Image (cartoon, rainbow, N blue to C red; front, side, top):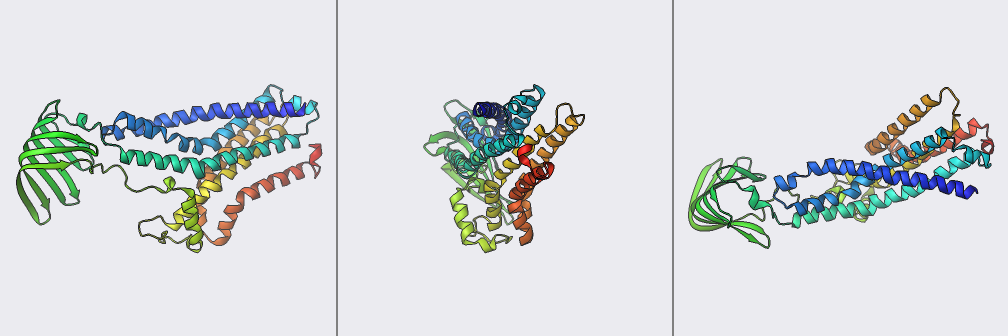
Length: 376
């Protein structure tokens, strides 16, 4: 009978977690999707590229929200059990409150493992896949960004003006301005041109014009009868290098193991000059592996709701207190990696802090029950 009761509790928590995480993830994904629209409007990618790229960001969003979704699920389900007197089923069947707390403690490990798997394997791979897909995608939407008799900023540092633009790709009166550097620009003027699509992207085939290079020293003019202006390499807003969050965990761990003594160095990098700082790698590994352990703390915190009787006049205040403390712990867990740069004692403290919290929680239970938790 007790197994069925705990199975029902687990089922309710899991279902609420799935529904709440899907709802919150969807909201965040939609908001983020709106911000990613510049992939189409400014970078010239197709809507297909936009949807695939934004879809691949879902695992990262879900992973970030696991800790919030689980806390809300536990808090809501346990509170509902209390309000509807469903919690009495546990006590009338001889289940002790300490057994209830221990059950919450055990199932929290499942969600810790889920988040660690997402952080270590799924999120870096999907983020890396999304960036590679974006880099390798041709700018299919590019022709629609060009408008007649208007300056079109079709890419970063690139403006195009055309007098006439026919559906077959023929152009007249073409003006192209490309910003090459802080004080360096290239201007191309052509009377005729054609927009061609290649397997690498697009290019302009230009006729009867001139190229003007402008820098601090002056300008240099070069006339041409025919030239090709490649657009496939001009997607400046698409990053060429991977971010730290897109790098596979085993690469970061191997680098950290190799240079563990330099983990707090502000300038030391992993092997290459353009690689990541060891300090940043250390913080990233901490966020991927240690941060999920705070799920256990939040789970135990939620279980404290059963310690106050429904008729207790301070029950509502106690619930608000638990809820506020929970969100403060979530915020703290997201910022805890910042303290790793301090001295060794502080570093060790923050690495062991989740374990210390769990120890103090059960120590508090012992004090409450006068060292007789079986009677709780």
